[in-house]
Length: 251
Image (cartoon, rainbow, N blue to C red; front, side, top):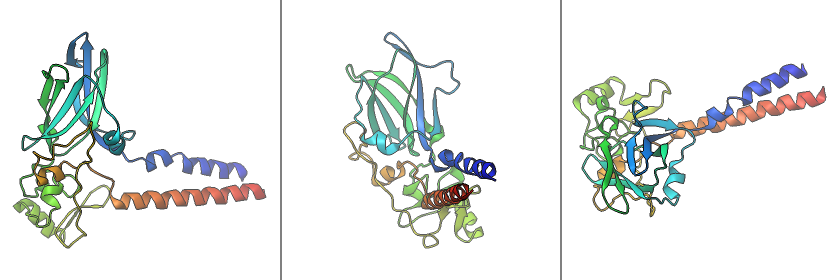
């Protein structure tokens, strides 16, 4: 009996790390440097990609002191510089991660010393928010990916999105989690857009970015239902482990 309880506790505790970790969406840049010559890593199919990283924290990144010989500048769909951060590129192969923003469509890497452009490229294939004032679910826009278009005070929906909302009683849910990701005004409490955090080293260009664009650039955050689920699950796991421990002591 004692061994069966021990195995149960281990099986319950093993999934905890992955269950409690929320993966942040990030842009990853893969470089290959030889001397002063900097290129993208040709051995990687997509040297610039969007992925999720459980170890990455947007809050930690935005508050960290960034320095280096190069500046990575991200531009939004309006052409304004949305984010700029300094970093270094090591010799050989290396990579650098920055938060993903749904409205960013191109990047530029500039030498801080000379001001010359080292690398630049297009990120439009990763855009899920065009900030045109119309919520278009068919283009990947929803309350999480495009705050400016889908979570403002007076949302305008595309005909396709409106038809889908009418078909689903005003709420479109994530097919995997079941959480609401798009809804008509009043169907679910509105989401309050947040502005980008600002620091000396990761600075949104608030003077040149329209309010709608700034809100749309907000990275995705953990929905409240996920936080509640994590807390309840954690409490249940601790409770089961405590009961098993008490039984082991009595035996």
